[in-house]
Length: 561
Image (cartoon, rainbow, N blue to C red; front, side, top):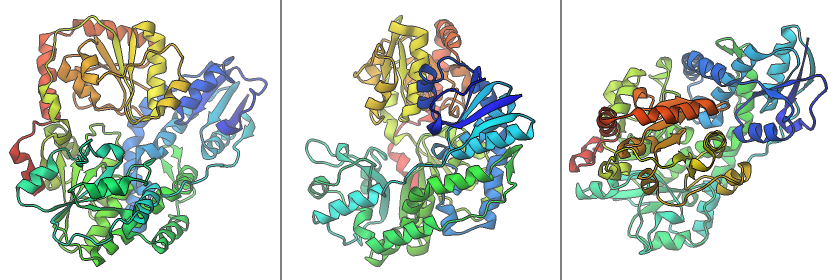
């Protein structure tokens, strides 16, 4: 018995003696392109069902493993790290799940392709331990880190003359992201992450300042003029981080070595090599998170004193670092996380393990968009005394949507912000529905990358989503809150499960309101089944929207105060 093992970057030709391909990793775009190219002559081993099984099996053990490490390594450097954060887009858990599925499916004559050198190495080692003759193996990791984008853009703004003095009078600091789209044609600043919250706070007598981090890809040139022309008060990280601060953060990140036991496992899966690889790959992101220590120290030294800092909360490393640093340098400042509309229990960064609750820098309060996520948090062991039900400040428009009787129009595919998710979604949907499919891309996705990876015949629409929903008979989605817009519009949503990525379903709390499909045939069947949804479903869908995305009222601001 023999198998061939390759790292995807080193795969130049199909080895002799293989008839099937088995992909182990998270790069959906590569898998699809290889399936139409170098791997076209091989039968692909379907990994989706096995991945779904192992994601459910390993979620708890994974959270518990990292929680135990957090207790042992309790420090600012640890809580700022990609390991502690459990960000699913750093892909460690996805890779562990992929490896577990691949180990179940290894068989004679398979070419197993890993998305990273560590995955390829683990595949080769596991195959040898099971008596396979292994040909090939991993290559070396060629990934090079990028610069700290927010720091670089902040420095560009600073060079244009942006003042460094901190506002000493503000009582509330809102940590947000900015780019050119944050400013209207009249020059007024409109925060896209907190909606009307800044004005609601001002109406209660609060002085508001913004910790404004430029979105990756934002150009610093010209941004200072927009900031200065607004009547809002901004603090830019680049104005408070010196070159020495940046060097220190990089040095700490590049020396970070959390000492993972060589025989560490999550369930039956060896994880030490994968964890060490993640630490190496994410060092620049780790450095950016670590820089929040110096950032908050320098802001405090400039005279700022805040009663509260509010963060759009997803549990990421930079958020945890900011909360820890605010507590260290701004005595009495309370940290408040505003739920950034995540409902899936596979959004792992939102869920601390029980062992780490006493030491992890969690928000003093998490304000949810409605009762639904508050319930999810309580069920997953988040401290209930730290949960406050608020309202959907960013999605107040959803309660003005009118549901309509089932249209007999096209099938709408709504892409997510992640290019790989969108590519996989649209590839399946186009195979299932052809000319009946209309694709609406997320406004922040890499449009060119998505279109290049998909068939030229795909039909894209630039019209607003609400207009498209008025004509669609069903809507296909992946990890996106647009599923609730479909519910509000009376359009049956269909969750498209992945062959490559974690299935983060925003309608997980109410699975009876959506259909789900993995294959092309299942997609067609789900579309047919959606035609039977009637008034009872519409009423249930309307209630689910209200529970998940609470209507905005003047009293919503109380949850933050």
